[in-house]
Image 1 (cartoon, rainbow, N blue to C red):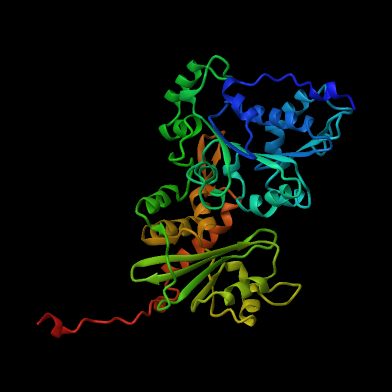
Image 2 (image 1 turned 60 degrees about the horizontal axis):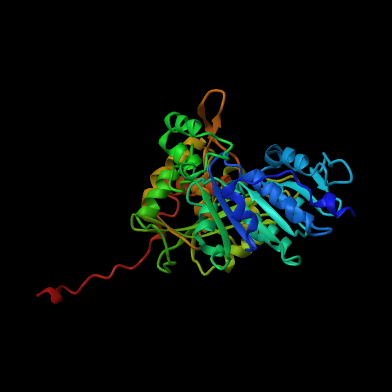
Length: 430
């Protein structure tokens, strides 16, 4: 092993990333403006750490595989050119250093490619766009036996993802992070890859929300093309995202987006007067219908209806039964199949429902996050949003919520609110 070769790296960090490279914390979060150099810093930081750990295993993970390749592959090849005994593996996007350490690129859209692996360190790029379950179910366990480190980098996309990490909310609260926030207004332009003049031009040409999010690292700016973003922000402002306990006097309606390869998402709601209470949410993948039926039966709820999508009624060739029939045979009743409708109509039903909805912040956390991030696809060529939302991890919760709102609008379980009214004694006012 040639130690001198391993240690050589032609990288000179920006002044504002120097403390990041010197950090002692196991976990780090870097919230930086676009083109600040955070990807280069994270890649080179990984290389530097790999040179100090013989036979180490490292990963750079982006929301999508092609995104990881576009963002980091050229950097990884360039800065390890004098440090590897053989050419990079182009098919696996992997480089091996002289000391036996490997660095490989992955996409969070294919979590199975990460399962079973152990890592000494990982970088999660644009974590705000990654499926939340990837960290807890795949990446964090992969760091356990090696006590590996993790660095989260990206630019805000609303109050989720990086927002929770930055503020130490929820599962991130016990973790000690090195934190770096670098908005354009605080950058040092002497060694910046972007000029002050360019920042001034961007401020004039972008919308206020776009500039605030992309260059001032604002978690409060509206997500571009968000379907329900402003309505969910209003719900939070009105403190309707809070603790919403189950009311035993009101029946529960569930709505399902049933996935085969994709996750299955289930909302649990109660109608209390004019309000819709979202008291629970469940999402999982890789299970059969019996698993979800057992989840339904395990809850301490009394049910009025279970709303399924329109494609739950046709019989499957393999079993000769429909999803509806299977659920009914598993004691999940009564089942209502939502008629086929235009997605626009369902979105409108959801938009009318959200202002009167209350969400349990803890039990519905993943569903709430999905509704905040659910967005329309942007057509770069036409410079406009398409009529169809992006199909990603947020779609399952959003589709399930849409079925719920359509079902409630057409009168499913109108009698679900059955609290006995107690009137005061008239003599008390005499």
